[in-house]
Image (cartoon, rainbow, N blue to C red; front, side, top):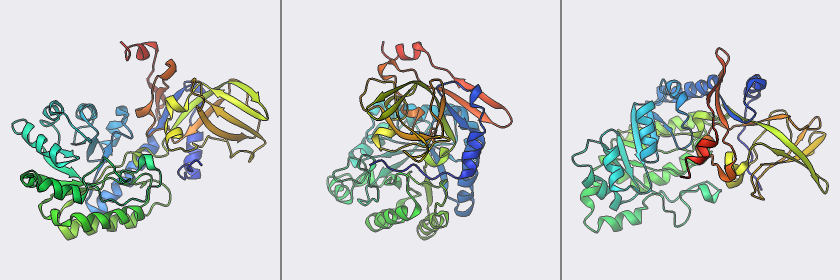
Length: 401
């Protein structure tokens, strides 16, 4: 069973409908920068109320052409390794925080001179990082911990699943520190956890209580706590008041700074994927529309999560008069996006717009089967539609030789 797509307001749907798709590439991501800025303004109100810092998680959204907008509101970036950190250094600036499940010594040598903090996944990694970076800069060190509680039902996205490799449990911490690693632990300036995925503040509260119970003895040496990502702050109905209460509780009680690092919430409901119908075939009683896009190549979360992205002017199966199964153009038999209904019959050459295609899309695209990558476009009411990146055969070829 597929998870529902995040709720979107009718106002946003109307704004996205107003984009001049007739001027857009037949296969292209389109980011509405006005809506992107609207999300940032909402995030900024949380900063103003609590004094917390909010970072862009580049793993979810790293379209650096929009960084001039984002950097006006956000405090910096969080990176999943060397390459994202370099992108942040080159295009975003401000604070740069880096976490990876495992670093190599050469990666630490590369990022230590310019990053604000390096967050390690284990005590042995922390010890290695401290030793390697001694003469290379003055980053702060953090440790990712595993509170061992989560409300995330999708196992592939659950960092606190049994036997998870992500974060140090309290038991693992005690075991590591019994092996003469206590000095490494004394070097940390902060603790980090990340347990959420598209969730509300009540899920954060559940995790935060477990985190506090298991690790509060370490707070006295911390300057900051990082509550990770997965906070669906910009979704309609999100409990912002509770989020602020949780942040203020930790900051006021323990005299430290809280960081949030949403990726999805920054770009939620700001982008579409414009696609085109290439063929319509029939198998049994099923009408199948083949598109110039692909779930596995261009929106893999449709298969991984799984979920069913909404399409402008469409409905659930049989809700409207004509129902089609929409399929991608790769050879993967399961390259199926889902079933949708429309008020009229689809025709070859029709364009369809998939919603919520800014986060975790561009960062995950592949050229499997040599399927072309979607162009990337920006749009706002003042400057109109602008194609900022086009892809060609060379983009496919240069990755393979």
